[in-house]
Length: 403
Image 1 (cartoon, rainbow, N blue to C red):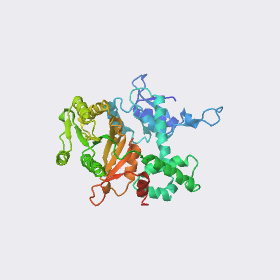
Image 2 (image 1 turned 180 degrees about the horizontal axis):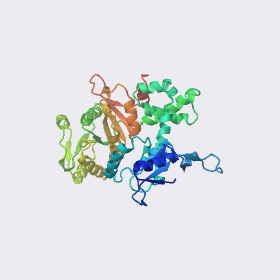
Image 3 (image 1 turned 135 degrees about the vertical axis):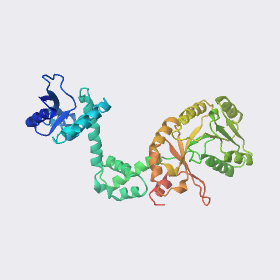
Image 4 (image 1 turned 60 degrees about the vertical axis):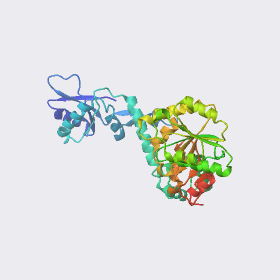
């Protein structure tokens, strides 16, 4: 790709010379040639007929030569952002000044900074842009938006982009939803079954630690779980341990009040040695339930606090099942999911406030992103059972409004 220079008494004269040879469809760079002489003003241009070899247009026949394709508008846009942040302030001033002088010339203007164009970076950017455009074009297959399964999943609250992605993955394997409906239904069912999993574990493991944000209601769930244990066997012994590094977290009184009322041992630990000692003394208990501070989003202390907690519980002699408690009505924060996956690494999830959600698609999408399987559903409706073991088949039936 050649960059051609033109000179004139004024910038407009140099531009007119370039237009006279290459037409108005030229690409003027914000660089001036270094070899200016006799007080002339120079410009640098890329003519429209220049070409770039494009690997993506290579023929399936490996013996054929690569096809050279013209610089498209898309590629010119990519060139336009090559050094987007180089000399940002200086370039912005140049752009604003030149827009007035060049507005009548009707050619495309580029701000490329002072550095040389890096073609490898341009090609990488082009591949990314073209890939996004391909995805957009694929999602425009409107005929699949009218498919009964598509509409049913939309009505359940699953985002359209997620459903489109499922459809396209299956279609790309050669299974069309209209031509092979039975095969397609089977594949969609596999997607749903894979997300909800097959939870065959015990309702409650002997040693469990609970994490959640300020809206999770996890302490109420701990209370409900104690009630659940006592209703099954009143003779079973239970201990509650609050892990509170550096005493940064003020306990909720409800859990203390409940434990005092029913004579359930409850203790707060502020360091790893105390935590280990309490666990050793209470190792004969049938159940140990561990409470933790609330996770406050965007709080700089949360990360360090929970790094400490994870380190403490990993050093315990008996392993703990890590459970994340998620408010069903707030399943939209993907940033938090990433943080919890990396930091907490919970292997189970309990959805609280389950009675506040009408469409379960948001829970399904949350499970798809969360690296854990669902264990229980919790409701605040006193007329129903507050703690419900998660049943994958029932959940899918409820999701699709079939139960």
